[in-house]
Length: 309
Image 1 (cartoon, helix red, strand yellow):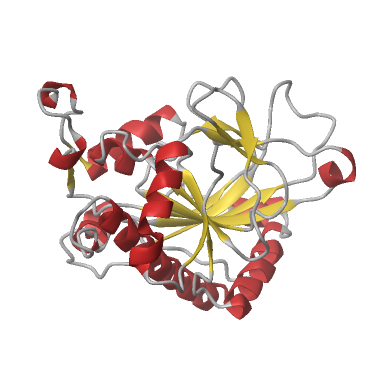
Image 2: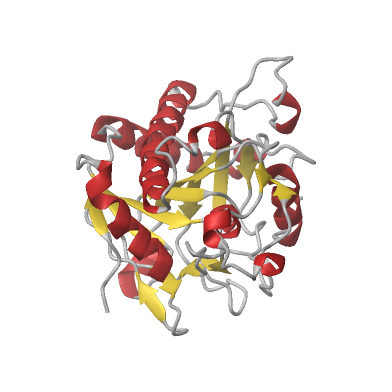
């Protein structure tokens, strides 16, 4: 059985499109080298993320927005719970989203960002990283479009001004008081279109194969992990799979260390109608395709399921 694809974004997209497509169809995951996000920017972001999570608990909680569903700012440890999970995940995080000017047609769907005053350069660093993630994600979507036999730029208008969210994640050292059965991130699927993940080199990320077995995702230093989200799965009628995955608790000394990562959840624009592509539906089985739904309504349904709405 072929493994999870590892490809370079420096290669012509036509030469990697089908390898990416194969990996997404089999595993829902692929690994991207040479993704174009500057290492200096990544290093700065990691440093500032660690600085924020090291702040006193009461300071961090001052950036929690009641009623915001965690879409911006801080979400405390033990808040998010995977769909169908019994206990909350062992993590805390910060969300950065898109900033739209007042009066923009989609501004009602996107709350303003907030920024911690305690961390110098936080806004500038993560605004730049958000933009860099978007650029890399756009390239991946171009390759996906080519694999699906679509125009290379098919996805560009579908994600323009999309409700994409960058998450700064901290998994604290594991304590003896963790609830029974709790892990860093319980088995779940991502809601969005595609996810781009930095900081997955440390062991722990696992995906569930078609055979029902957990498979570790091994990542070269500095590479991006890409996985298909539920929105793209729905659009392609599961031709490209949104795969259940998790972050398991480490053993030994690793359990005593924090783990940090930065996923970017790339979303369709809120008013985009997710209507299954005709090319992904077998003739005579049109009635079995998912019903069309707006990206915004799909997101709200799923956020309610994971305790964030």
